[in-house]
Image (cartoon, rainbow, N blue to C red; front, side):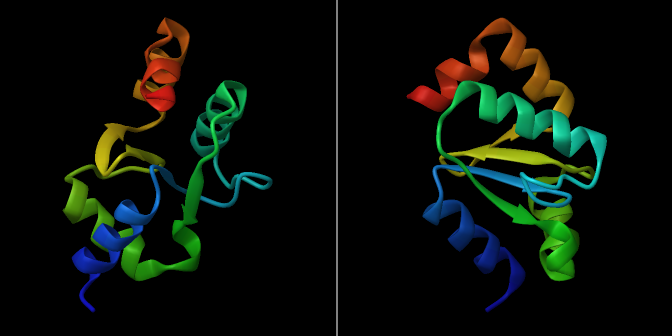
Length: 101
């Protein structure tokens, strides 16, 4: 299975999916930590992929999304953005609205 197919399968299987560095309990960068804090504050269930555990996904996702950095949040298969966009949307209430749809 090629990497784009694997990524698409992950996105189809999870309504809210965060590609991040580390895990929700042990984020391995400040940006991933901020992203997790926002998601936990909203309280909707979400899934994650630790990009440090899958080098192929880590590299393939950059090309797939045309987004060079992590974390990357996807909702219903669509890229929402990275940490800055997530935090901005969290403060405005847009992120909560998006995740609760």
